[in-house]
Length: 390
Ligand code: SAM
Image (cartoon, rainbow, N blue to C red):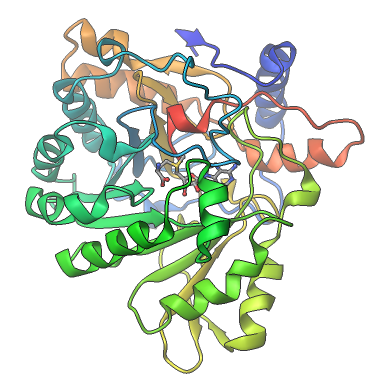
């Protein structure tokens, strides 16, 4: 990759070696069993942008800010993200014009869905103005772009209607517990759960549907919240999804022991509310979705650690500083900011992105799974989740 820069890493000594090494190793190997490849049916034109493993570029996570008003213990622990922490300045972040230009370039390449993220995206002033601009984009197939946002929900009650009016279609809200004490502890800033629940209700009332709620489950911390959360969101039309605690972020103290697997989370739900497996809707879907047997709705499980899904990954990520990452676990990036700042047209940007994507052969999650299995291999270089977005 040209214009490579290294993000903050938990162990800088590993930054060069493992990423480059694994990429070379990967190219020499066929996709392993369980890694699906895409066929022509997934690629609707001959000029579709596909990577070295045949995965089309279809989804973009666009991070609009690296700051967050929460200090979730597993993502931005307050011991690391102190008041002296140096976040990006406004000038270092992409402007709305630049974000819109970039989004246009990705759409030219076949992106059909953009998710705004952060940091906390609702901290970005006048985000509705960006939403308005992105909502006007049309996909290569002539359909409206799918536009979604991931938020901690703290500002959603006040903003849901404005976001909907601006053209946002859906929101996903992160919520790690229903018990106020558990939630206040996990968000690190003593934020009450009632305000997030109000935000979720406001999103439903505004029609930002289907509203999804994401819960990161950390063993010994909040697994006892699984059933209460399931109970709360049954019959509500909201899809709750449990996510395995991942070793991303470079700041959180992750151990394999702290991962409460999707299989265990599903069993916990199933013991109380019987479930029926549902067909996966799109192969790039991250969650395994189940229906409640009594018709009370759906619940999903995201097995990013126990069953990594690299073979189906059609996602690119642009961090708040304009760096393009091809994976949440990637340690190198491509500097799109420099190109946008130099006045590059959307067509030229699309050409650059296509070239980067064409070389993409990573399947970091699967490789990390193998590396983790070796004794003594616990520390990995990771980009900060708050910069690149979840
Ligand atoms: N502030 C927004 C929010 O709270 O949804 C968007 C950014 S946040 C980084 C996006 C998602 O990443 C959240 O659902 C969060 O729970 C998830 N996340 C952060 N660190 C994680 C980790 N170590 N393991 C699993 N999920 C994580």
